[in-house]
Length: 186
Image 1 (cartoon, helix red, strand yellow):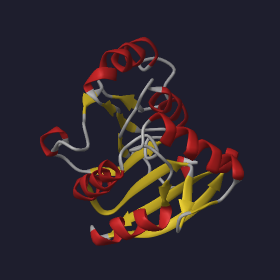
Image 2 (cartoon, rainbow, N blue to C red):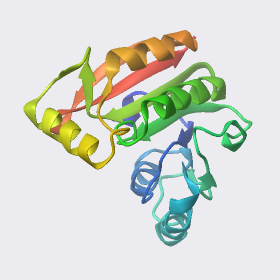
Image 3 (tube, rainbow, N blue to C red):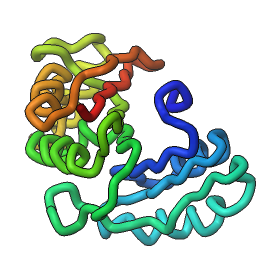
Image 4 (cartoon, rainbow, N blue to C red):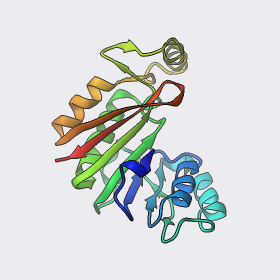
């Protein structure tokens, strides 16, 4: 999925790296990829252990997985100071509060150079309408666990992105009723 979007030897910041599975997978598949995993403090130790265990061998030519960095999208001082070719986040928007998703979009926009990409993967709704019954059930389950969680509206995310100089480039259907929303820095 990322191969079609990323430039060669891309520098990618991942938001909400969790177990590190995406960092390892993509660094093994994409030549020259420079992947910066990040997550909140409470998951950083497990992420660092996975990267240390699996993130140094078997990588594609020239690919590198950096040491994980603490990043809370709601804390402006947690964001790295340098630019990235892309900011990627998978399956995180629906577990964040809506305000945190808006902060993710705003923070990503500041870290992308012209032509840089924000890629958001996961289940989304459109104008308040679920795209599948399974997504509606998942949304209800998340909200029963925590009212701040739930599937985010792709149209609202597109408006947030546009307000930060990110143009909607693609809305790609993915397996299991997921999508990848792609935005480009103008």
